[in-house]
Image (cartoon, rainbow, N blue to C red; front, side, top):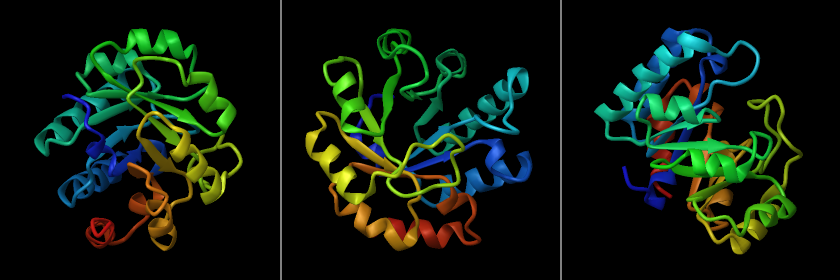
Length: 211
């Protein structure tokens, strides 16, 4: 699937470690797909996350689900797995190995890279082969165990204005601050708990589509 920045609009991230069990994982993902996410990132990382064949099995099922809804699939920090399941893209952070080597290994996939500061942005600014950047955490978050300090709306806006690539905001974004984040002119917003911990996924995605 060819990259289009419109894919980034309603960007949902989830791994089995974010929910109570695999059954819940699939249920939440199916609801999110049905009600209007525009991209899904499978992110299996942190305490309780799957590895090996268990992770591969989930990734294959996720690929089948996202394909059924024609929603692009991105794999977090596992380029080999992304190729294996024929994902559309891959995402990696500053600590996930050499940016240059990761871009080269991601041939055929669209590429997202996480950035938390202007210094980190400047480090990757001259690289070719990146399609978008994830910027954050915008606010304090409990969804990512190793999150950097929050950059706030001012820090986000600075990087949006500086970036040569479309920007996806991430980190602590909820219904109450969503409008303010979108107002910074980001290309998209990425969330975990705003969907995964919501009792009415249909309602929150209907609200999100107003922006």
